[in-house]
Length: 209
Ligand SMILES: [Cu+2]
Image 1 (cartoon, protein in one colour):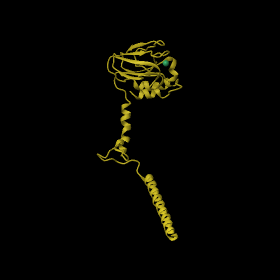
Image 2 (tube, helix red, strand yellow):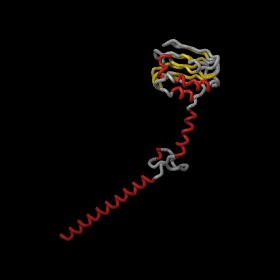
Image 3 (cartoon, protein in one colour):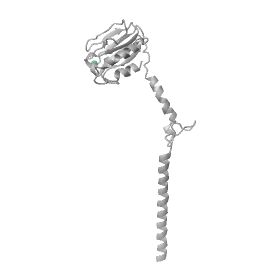
Image 4 (cartoon, protein in one colour):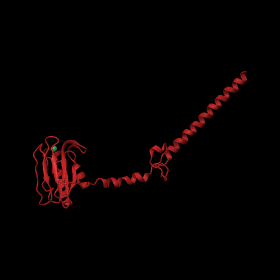
């Protein structure tokens, strides 16, 4: 009886050792696999490419994510706003941050009108000297008041909110072709010199034209 018990115990110990050995080698193998697997795999047609609902181990096309960048740069460009009337809101807070015109960049046609709306108080719209086309009329709206401007000269116009100029509360309007864009860009450094926050805003706005 004692002898049988001994065999039984030995068998159990051997079995436990074997299981441990197998599982540890399994773990080593999966760790190696984890470290050496490629970052992504090229997908083949009908392979569940980039579709997470295809279940675990779905494949991602690395080329697709690389190709997404240039098209995003293109979509950054502003499209022509349709119609003869356009609205720009003067806001304490908007999609681009605090103290903003919204939309901050618009492209319109010659002869169109922009209605600046004093949605929030203590803002105005005033054109910036040297940042509008030659021969174009400047404007200087009163605080907390709506103002409508009709644009008869082609080119790029940069305007600001006077009390929030330091916070880069500026806006850009392109009327027809951007005939004076180079001149506006070279003057931009002077406009930016008063900014203490949102210092990239004007460059960002001009890059959308
Ligand atoms: Cu303002």
